[in-house]
Image (cartoon, rainbow, N blue to C red):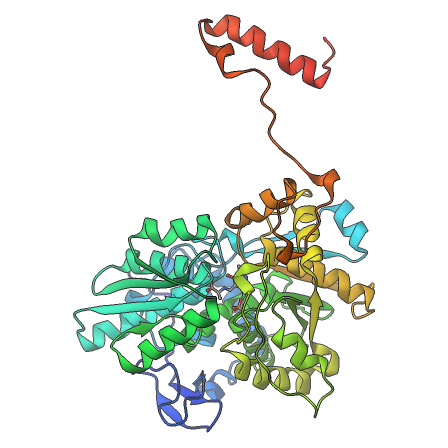
Length: 481
Ligand code: F0G
């Protein structure tokens, strides 16, 4: 439906290579610099024009869009001018992504951790992870491109630890022709729930042995040499969409992010890149007047970004790592493609917000699992990566990095249900040794069958109800009223 409130502003977008600085117009589909192979960020070269509107006016504008009835402005494009202001309303794909709830920690959990914090439940996106933010933007852009170019068929491809493929397949199946989805997964390294998603969406699901990093190399080769549209976060349109996370956090806290500490699990490093970029844009426009602090979190089984920043400035050497099995499997990545973006944005973040504005903390597999189980026993719906964030907050507290007067926001990047298998391993003490997780047996939980299967046979409902109730009463020791 056409909506007269849709923004009329259009910017001028360009790809900027982070290695050689070369620029390219945004109306061709590029992933890496044709000259040097470097990764891109997208830039609105007309950004100065946005500065002619003051911070309070932007805030009011975004606040008033919260009531928009147009689906185009209902999700991540509430912040249209800051993201990808070149698409038209008809291009925007909306599946209900974004504007996810921020839920304050249950009081006993908060007291245990010793500092107030909240979870932002990005698992409440349509494909149950934050990836939908980036896909909504990337698919809107693809629609825009297809319309301009009259393309007959576009094969979208991505490598994935599970969630990117689920999101890509979902959006491709919704948009339909000329888009078709192909996903490439590391065999056995994606949970059954994640695997069911692209299958259900009708994508072509291909698997290869190895880990995500191997699959990523394969799709990079494909994207460089064949006619396919790459949907990994190497695709900078994904990054723009994921910036919406930062805008939503700022808006929720009434545009006052002073004393906020955001914890973000880092895998391929697209998410943390996007979040920093989003806050920097708001800061630049005076929409926020301070920057929050950003903490990347990595498991010791996949921690190249942590290792890089653990070295003092001037002595940092980038070194991909070989990953070991991790319960934070979606972030189990040894050679993140967005590392050059992290370096660039972290530098700008620290420049504007000071030394403590960007840090990376490390957690153990044990800490991740314990934290996820604890969080969910307190009414949260954290995936293992969400558990990783809570573990990161606990470690940051222990290291004295987060003060009593700060407030943490943890990114529950996916829904707990996608990682039910790790919960099951925890409850049944079934982790293969390589994970290095010893469950706290007091937290174990299992269903109890109260009557044998035959108990239902040959009895009418009333009789069975009496029998069943008797069994429950006995098990719970219920008193009559
Ligand atoms: N949390 C979840 C649930 C993820 O699926 C991912 C990444 C991350 C955290 C890490 O985010 O890569 O932006 O640093 N999953 C990708 C995928 C790699 O293929 O689904 P990142």
